[in-house]
Length: 345
Length: 197
Image (cartoon, rainbow over all chains, first blue to last red; front, top):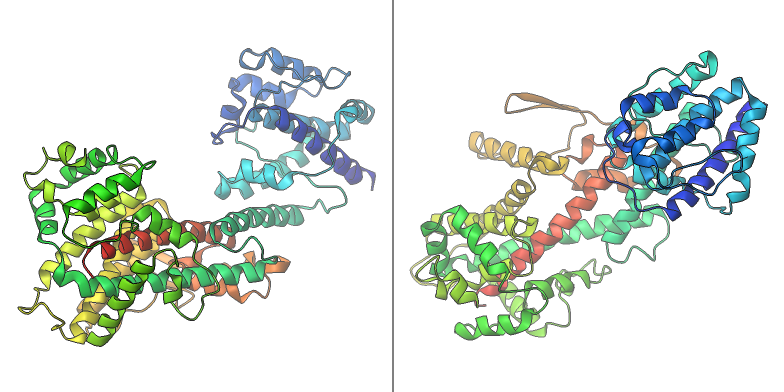
């Protein structure tokens, strides 16, 4: 059928178009709570946006107070888009979509002309649907499905009645890519799949060693392994602490009994500043000189943290291999501690 | 100067323990790390005080005692981490509930071991008056790479509260959970390293 194909083309073009806009624009605002807030427009002009079916409304948008100064050089046909922020981009997406959908019913040739105007600007070929989705929808995951459904509902409505309801809820639109199905279910599924892929990307960055692995099942196994390793480390450390608890410093008691929680917090904040992160080592050495304990000056939490990050993932069997080779003394002490703990048991 | 800046707080702060300092360095005052460290240290002190050290400081305590103390410390670590995170995350809420539930259970039936959360698929639980119904959302595992994936079930078992989350939420919670676990391990390690071996 002609109409769905047309919408696909429109969709593709608009995504490429908006990608171009985003490239040229400042990073998007983080407030994604309401559509009108995104627009930074007064409510009335937002509603106006929905109702006016002509491209001249873009100049109306542009002329409204907050969006004036920036215009894209696009389109000879009077399609001027303010390009200063992502909310405006979303506004234009929405506006154009209702525009397009209403045009589908009424003025096909007009839509075609407006669409063809944006053609010369398009130079991209990669759809950034996932990024778009992540950016827009990552912040409002719960409501997205409702909004999508409402959007589709309203798109349908505007198709039939060609009178945009004054929808005041924020809409986040999912656009169909070229050649993909456009029915509700597949759209929703695709959106969710992209959301899940975005989360997987985050996890891959978090868990060391996952970047090289391709395929979600193996990455998942890696993540599970990492979590289990961490939990095992917690168990080991709690064993160590249980063994060391009788030998804990008496000052520890005094610190927490004599001072209130707020004071300790204060002491935390006071102590942070004299010990900047940029130069930890001389301070640590100074500290250690005060105490008669024989401590490895390299055993700093920052180093510990780095050590954690450098842990090889392949150590599935031995938990002691988690220790980094950079701290042989630490390893030795830990090994001794473990042996002692084992002997106790 | 560390000692001069903090000396006004406590007369014997010059002999202040390095763990507090070590953990305060490199982090902002109100970060997760400091919040967790503070809570955990307090609980540790409590545990230490409740189990008085034996007269001869060598390895005199029975293995049973050490094991019990290990369990207490482990539970303290998880509960202080969950409380440091607060109610912002689903997993921390679930973890707090689980720990509370297990404590209640051990108090009622000392013989019973605390059950791990996420065993039954549907289980009504009461938490401070609210009733939680944990349902398994099966519909969200439809996409092709996730279809026959046993890893997802395993992940649900690992992450507290994972049984009742959808896949997207599960992955997000996993990411935060992993980050908090790393913080926990590093703080515990720095505490453990501060004391003489």
